[in-house]
Image (cartoon, rainbow, N blue to C red; front, side, top):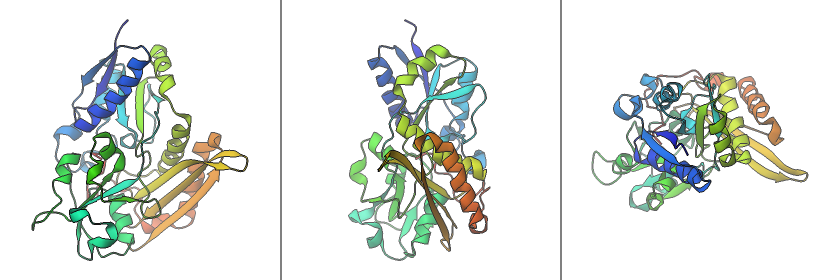
Length: 319
């Protein structure tokens, strides 16, 4: 049996995520070889948005796929541009990990306990905008780095942060949930489209690999993230647009339906616009595009620059 060559970034989080996919494939009887691929996002310490934002972690993996150097790649789904890459296909989206954001604060504090003037670290315009909209008087500092680096920034001292906000999924996958002081509910902060989900990508003409990945695909997760990403596509949203979205499969009187919520927020916290929609799971993309048009009709372009790609804060895609 020829081993499946699985391309992965070399960060601890990427290796862990790729390991989960590799283990699932091995459990199904496949041999898997992990191949490390270095991306610009791993080596360049500049703002991710200035390097191209969404896709900066995916580009090298995709180049390796196109070149035939690997057979499949594992991405954090929120790292992938909403437009499909020609010649490639996301063949599997495994069950999603909790998509919520998490507060990791000094002294075990919650968001409401931080106090006016507390400094929160985040490189995400989406997170910053929604936190500012809460009206808690928080201050923000742009940060970058892996999870461990950002967690080490929290603590006492003049140069330290009072808190950071990170993806719960990444903290879970690296066994760092003990650092969480509060999970931020969607009513406070909607996550990035696709947050908490993995995308397993391969060449669109490789039927053998596609067939091997099909059992890993979770239909409910795929429906939810398809709707979320359709919002970005319909908005033609830039990598720094402060857009949050969450799709969830819920039970209705006639069976499961897709519930979709989205937010556009001003990065200074002066305004935010939240809308929601519900419909059949089979209409996931159409629902996302319809909700995006509602946001636009209700004034989203006046609230935030939906095409923003070079903000003063960095992108969030290092999780």
